[in-house]
Amino acid sequence: MIRVHIFVEGQTEETFVRELLYEYFQEKNIYLNPILVKTSSTGKGGVVSYAKIKPQLQRKCLEDKTAFVSTIFDLYALPTDFPGSSSLPKTSDLFQKAEYLEQEMGKDIGHKNFIPNLLVYEFEGLLYSQPQAFAAWFDASVVSILQAERNAFASPEHINDNPLTAPSKRIGNCCNGYDKPLHGALLAIDIGLDTIRQECQHFNQWLLRLESIVPVI
Image 1 (cartoon, rainbow, N blue to C red):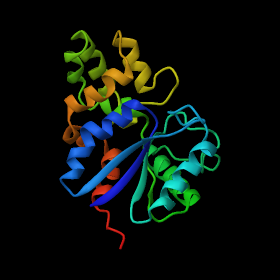
Image 2: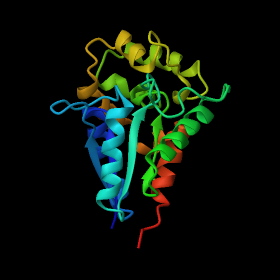
Image 3: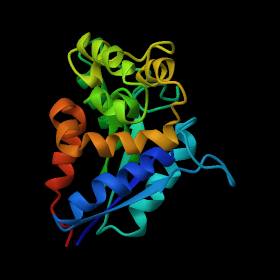
Image 4: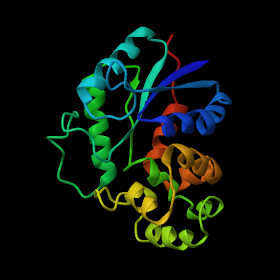
């Protein structure tokens, strides 16, 4: 069985891997193991400094070169020391931007069994794949608000990364009591992987890459 260790920013993403991605990939003979990044000797979660994350990724790549290592990090609010952040190409194509940063992270980690991945722009963007799912957890009136916001962009991944209007801020503003660790993965499960893949091009490309992994002999 192919093994892929996936470093994640928080408990929501960890649950997302375990509850939504795990079974799907297990059927393809690929075992996914989510790992919550460490921010200090006692703290876990969040990518506040790339310098603290890099050793963890490299160490895991070296532990077993027959396994693979990947990431689920938000493109939104990346730390300033992230590879490529100071040399981003001038482009309006956010997918090109994400791919450039992923390529730079891949070069910086420097191991063939590393598969870099960034969410565009953040986890909550995936939830805009089907706003109707929010009706099961919040007042039904939020669906029309979220759907209108979704319709204003080319895809859920295009919903902007402004500190005031990022997907997480938009959802928090209209969904009273929204708690990411509680609702995030549950909403994603309700929406379903097929719908998310159809709506979110960059996220789907990452899954396709995982699906096409060739075992290391």
